[in-house]
Image (cartoon, rainbow, N blue to C red; front, side, top):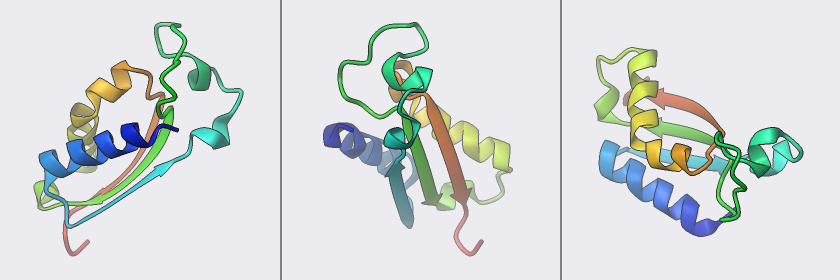
Length: 99
């Protein structure tokens, strides 16, 4: 995985959510051989070495009063650029402070 991609994802989530806690785990290596590892959704080769499978654990005041689905939509929206570039799978654990 490209560290610059992980750094960019961290910056995007920090800017969009002002989290009190944020953990990112690149799980791409666990999925070697899966279709999304080598190709994005359009079938193009992902030659940038970017992340294909990512686990996000985030605690943010932005999630107060939001449902699980709303929280996931927020994170997916923030990462839409990475998804367009070939982020194939995104596991999200999104909580508000105190949860």
